[in-house]
Length: 220
Image (cartoon, rainbow, N blue to C red; front, side):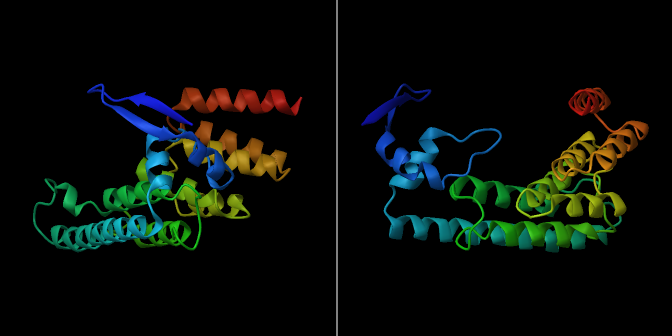
């Protein structure tokens, strides 16, 4: 059974729904969803051929990370590094690497994907890189949030972020921390977390306040 999906140039892409159906139990869902065409292409490619392509792209992305780290260190020693290009942004290089792994390994974290190890590396390496310049970057916080989604006790990860002032100006940190605490039946701590974020006027504050009101309704 196949399904035609139209591209912008009206050339149909053949999606093998039988392949998707057979593999659906091993596909980890994403909040933003997954592209059916991309999934079909990944799952339909012969294993040996797919492994070769993945290895080549992985090596390229790894080189991009290493190059960005090296260039950023060099740029930091120059008098004017304010005009740094993308190749001096190791955070962006790591984000692209992680996004590629998530997209191309639908099963999520596994020995084959190495996703958890990559997230551990990215969060650790960038924490104090260039005197911690990435700590309040929303992209860096999102790496921590993704990392926390794969550990048994995510609240520990978020507490670490709070203590080390990682992402503390963003509502996302307090929302995810509070959700983790609520799921662990630590309702009072969850309430405190929302209050701290609101007191700090974490952005976007309107969304954080709305999430807090939803939490309060659940506690009634």
